[in-house]
Amino acid sequence: ENIVGIWDDHDFGHNDAGKNYSWKEESQQAFLDFFDVPKESPRRKRHGVYSFHDANQGKVRIIMLDNRYHRDDYSNKTGDFLGEDQWKWLEDTLASSKAKINVIVSGVQVFPIHPLRSKYVVEVWNRFPAARARLLNTIVRSQAKGVMLISGDVHYAELMMANCTCTEKESKEKIPFHVPEFTASGMTHSWAKPRLIRAFLQFFFESQPLPFRVENKYFLGKNFAELDLDLVENDLGSSTIEYRCFDMFGQVHLKHKLNLAELKSFNAEKVDLETCECVPYGGNVSKSDYMFRIAVFIFTIVLIVLLIFIVVLKLVKLLWVLLYKMVEQPFAIYFYDKEKLE
Image (cartoon, rainbow, N blue to C red; front, side, top):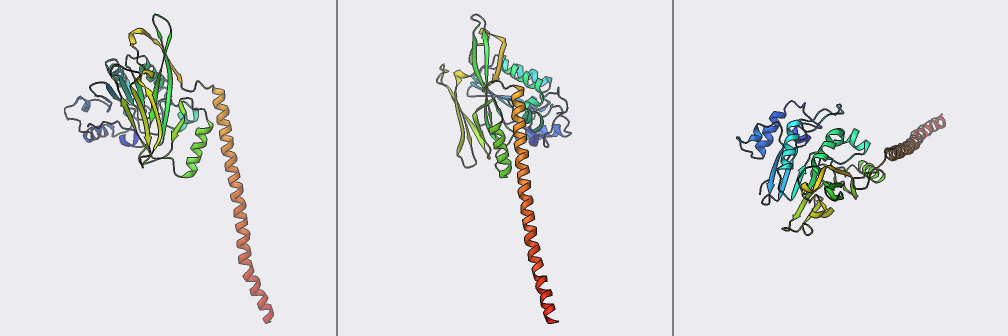
């Protein structure tokens, strides 16, 4: 069986690397060599390693996005991830797809929009909000069916979902469908250790509004995942997609099954594609709610740090007193004995 892949920052060059990485052309050729891409392949002349691969007699199309080669610096708030050539290629790839399932693979996560998580700490598509909006519009307004997202980078596993609708032309009724995002990362690094960081992330995930996450499903340990596609001919209701995330011992920690009918499965000609839109699985969250939750989170962290500091200070003081007494006692005995001798 063929193995295909796409890179992220550490495969591309260095941490958080983008289009200004000076060795990106050499990295591209090394990447293509590793995956045995023929020397005469058009991919050798393309700027970036994006590609698509059809599987299962064309029933599944895997679309690999390169979000490194053309990615602008994050200081540019109106920047882009893909570059115009790749955007045109993505639109054409989705438009030409006859597959029942189109799996779009991105090195970084697409859905997260939490201000702390998506603007200052983690590499996600919302670092460039306009590019993220363009990607979602391209996906839901394309003719491609059964679109889902796969991502990595963050060193934990996560299940997210967008609830989308398109308006039917004749009836003017809204047709609902899901766009899931499955994240698996990584096999060599995770946030399970040290325990302090694990506890910090768990507190963050449990206390903050993360509206795209499904049933708060995440796993912080080392992990890998698989998608099990069970496609039944001409029966969307019986065709299923199951996401399973494993730890390094093969134990399942996350599992979620969807019917293909829950994804975008209608004919694009029947709907007004310009009306298609998506909202978070858990509903929209107001800016004021985000700010309040963030303020409570920061206050709690500061309070915990302050309490730890006070406890450590008291322990140091106690240790100093004990050491002082241990050192003072022998000298007292020495002088006492000296006086007796005189």
